[in-house]
Image 1 (cartoon, helix red, strand yellow):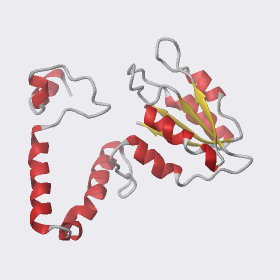
Image 2 (cartoon, helix red, strand yellow):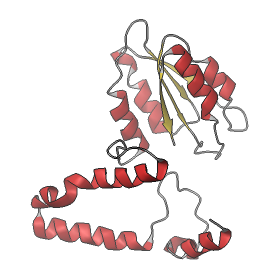
Image 3 (cartoon, rainbow, N blue to C red):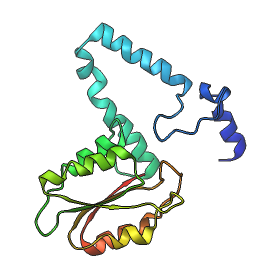
Image 4 (cartoon, one colour):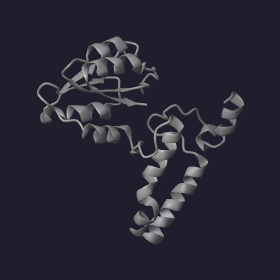
Length: 189
């Protein structure tokens, strides 16, 4: 896709006509057609009420997940959509139980704060949290993140792109170390 193709898409986002929008990690610029979709959703709610769930709403998350899956090469039915990364992490974390020999969660302090809050909330349940600090320039040392992983690590969680600095974390060495230690990995991609 060339620069001309990207310029063509710019008009689809009204806010870009009047401002430089740099916080897509939190709430992306709204596409023009999103307003139409929201109006359609509101119409279904106002005219169909609870029946809208059985008529389509239950399937919407799966439909969107399958569209995203097609883009990233994932099998149909394998991408789960949620309202934000922290909720998705909470769902994934629900599949991990602390055991005495494997009770550590390793994460990066440079991740979105609500993720750190979620992981701290797991400590009373038996998890130990290891938070890897950022570098002074708001990057993340992949070596330090990988070094924090050991045989007690149950889950490693980090963002592929840090929200404060846009630093891109190379996931390969972290994933390799986690596999070596038998830990699960959750990457906010």
